[in-house]
Image 1 (cartoon, helix red, strand yellow):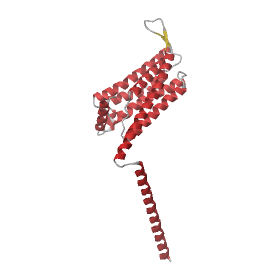
Image 2 (cartoon, one colour; image 1 turned 90 degrees about the vertical axis):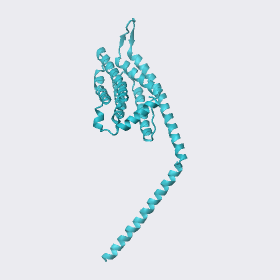
Image 3 (tube, one colour; image 1 turned 120 degrees about the horizontal axis):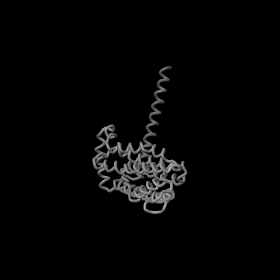
Image 4 (cartoon, one colour; image 1 turned 90 degrees about the horizontal axis):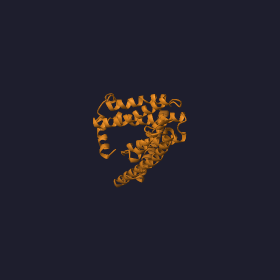
Amino acid sequence: MSEAESRADFLSAQEGKLRPLRDEITDIPNLITLARICLIPLILIFIDNYSYRLSALAALVFAFAAATDFLDGYLARRLGLVTVVGKFLDPLADKLIVLSTLVMLVAKGRAPAWLVIALMSRELAITGLRAIASQEGFVIAAGAGGKTKTALQLTGIIFLLFHFSYPILFFDYELNFHEVGLVVLYLSLVMSILSAVEYFRFFAAAASKQQHDLAAQGITRAGQKAKAKTRRKAQARLKRVRRLERGKRQRRGGRTRK
């Protein structure tokens, strides 16, 4: 996503905050996103190690769901419907459909568990990093490495869903989709690591720039520690004063009763 698109998304989201969430959920892009989530059970049900037809159907439904990911994003920008709900639902739907399918592929023995754990760990780590970055005002847009990772990951999953060997049109050859899917998924793991390093480097650079800007304004870690120390001393002093006053009131009350 370009800088101009990121800015357009941000401005649209700011405008979207003025709308009720109930209205946002019924926007066409968000309805498409919800429909993509509803397709997840179908994909999981159709995964079958003994049926060519069901495996192919699972792959086609997954491919359709992946295509709707590009459609809802395009419509949201085209129609000016980039909303708070959409910015939450879209990445959630992507994570749900990819991670749930990968887990089922492990259960069916089509993908190694360690590979899926590595891919899931990367996704969770980057999601957490982006959440921290957004709190600090940083925008971590998907770079070329992240987009390549996503494309390879989706392609690998589609091949693994097909699973069996199928004849290639116009060629006297049967392609083993399972083996191709594993190779592509391994490549996606490499790109996952490289893109994760890219994201962390960007975050470190943004954090360093923020620290430099704050230092230029006289806001430093040492200064913050000194203020915190002063605040703690003031709170401790106030507690001591309150304890003394409470003790005096108790002693006066005791003398009065006598």
